[in-house]
Length: 457
View 1 (cartoon, rainbow, N blue to C red):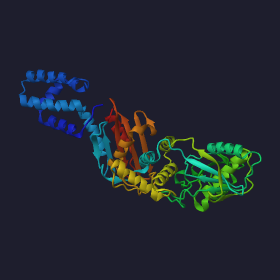
View 2: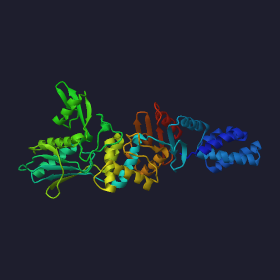
View 3: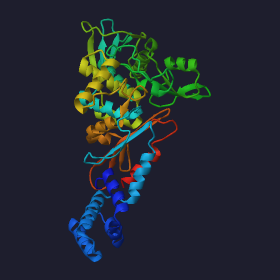
View 4: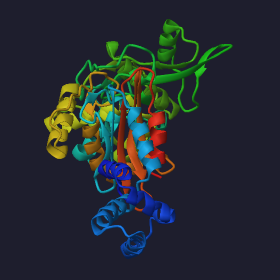
């Protein structure tokens, strides 16, 4: 599709009211306006023929030709101009929009410099920073040690995809390494790679999955999925057992079904991880004799017996976090970026600093207001123009975003906040980039997107 510009619409509207010659020429051959494939020579011939026919003077004809060519090359009709005007009317004082054509020209903008709450479209920026600091082929690791007392020490490094299926495979590997004569006393869980406690602005103490805390050694996104049965509680997923450690918390909270979140208080989330590892060890013939307790690896005496390298690359992790808008995973990546830039242990401050520095150095965005990486905090404030710069840099990775028709997109939702950003395939070649940020209570991006998609057909 040919590029469009607001100046073209204005020119067309003005000439329609000031120059009746243009109206007469357009009525003389309406079809030529609709034929986007006409050559310039055909258009010139049309004007020469009609200007002679209607005996218009050269000055008027030249001006009309200029305006006509502008409208033809811009592809703007009166109906389309009205559609854009209606679209902009949907953007209130607490909202913003910016759209750029495949060449980077801004074709529509309103309040584009105003800083608003981005919600989860901020995940695009965090993902882009992670690709910069860690690399698309980065794989998380988890280390397993034996100490002099035959305890098994597990040290996490922030792997966000340590899930039950993965733990099952790790347990099988360790069972083969330890062998029938092997003995394990305690399971010691080491989460010292990240500072504790790790408090994320916007994360509450609710039992909702989006409020799961972060940590260096976590399993199943720090959640437990369960259901209520006639005989009590049971796991709601076949790959994960419902452990007594989790049942104890479920009985305390008394929810009917769904997910509960394992908090960082008293290292609950890390200890639960140790219990889940213990279950799968037992399943594969290694029976820990002791208990699960927090601790740290002592490199001088502990012997590493196995290093698990994640089966998921960073690229695959980002695709999943963008698909499911996972806050936990996003902030795991943010903290990892901070470690890569400033060293361990990881914490939120280092992660945010890395994100802000990346935006300044790589995107030339100097005044971001960022407090975490997932968009769950209302303290995050960015402008539509800033997000457009993010999209420009991210375009080669656009296929990591969810897709719907000719659009790759990411949405964001908080109470009273509705945002959307992404790419729309042009009719000819390339992609339009757009950012819509609605911060008005009760409003949605849906009517804006309907108008936008209609206008870019």
